[in-house]
Image 1: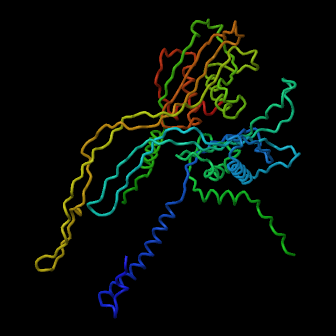
Image 2 (image 1 turned 180 degrees about the horizontal axis):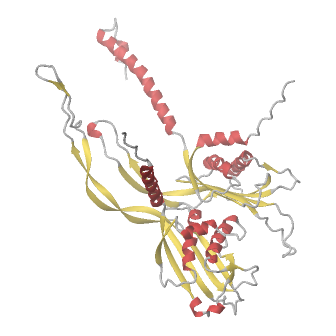
Image 3 (image 1 turned 180 degrees about the vertical axis):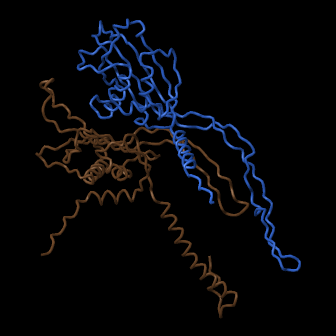
Length: 248
Length: 244
């Protein structure tokens, strides 16, 4: 497509000048509009998860500071990338709660069984509320609802901490050592249409931090923004800085 | 003489009463299905078993897990309300009570909802402000709209709406504590099955509610499934939650 204006010669007419000015003005406004659009899109791109937390604790037991992790990998070690990510996230989560992995050869306070995975898909109804479009008097529409069935998946992590018992069961000589008493248990779940766990690990882990070793009494639901969850996990899992000695 | 200012007490009392009423109305009521059966009527009163031991009937629920312990504590509280007590050992118990609880796979069903029929009408356009013929006074219109459509409720209609429901259940059954004879288990003395089917998938929240309904029907015979309503504020629910 040819640019007709570039072919014209001589000084530009008054009309062309106004067009030029309008174009310049539009460009400026265009940038503003683009910026606004980008900001809106940026705000719209915030990934917010609806997390369900269910924690329970043994009132007679302490939370236990050191732990040994026993991982139950649903993929049987096939998805190595997910395994590495899941392990890193849970260690960060536990560190954020003030727990640390017992050094090799040292008896830990607890054995934490860590289970993670994606549950079987099940049907759910999503109801969309069509909001009014404020485009003009005649285009205003009344809000209406629209329900549709979708398949959703439960993405979960579950931690169960038991006392580290190494003594064999006296009632069953020769049998392997019995499990210790459960100290605390927590389960975090996100339900939506995706069936991959990796993008949800940070939100799940971050949501658990303050409920580890606590008793929520029932299922609790709250919204977690993905970026905030990641930042929270990173920030809280770092050891607190050692205060510098006061200068004499 | 100045009139004495009225005491604010009646207003405050009214407000407090309204608040209490509102709080009372706010408690959730659950509709449960109860199915209970019992053979205790056939047993002589003196021979009625009083002591028990509980165990998990669901292989996926460990007997020593905190979650199972929480549910079994609710059931033990419910049993205590019926005069039953936990035996010090499995051998000395009169009854062995099996506990099974959980949530079924969600399923979709249609429920009837009442929705308004909204009719759009165009409002009278608002006239413009105008001055009097001599220009001394300005008349501002006080009624009329901008000519925009206004929605009005013209009536109500019933609609079938899809909804996903989860069945939460608690089943307890008591058997006599004796050895199985020729592979046949000891006879069942009583059993109570309670379930709640609604859109909530919060099993843990429902357990004290289900246990409280169980408490009412231990050792009774409903003959068929019976719908009962249980409120969060019921004394039995409070008793179950408080525990022993």
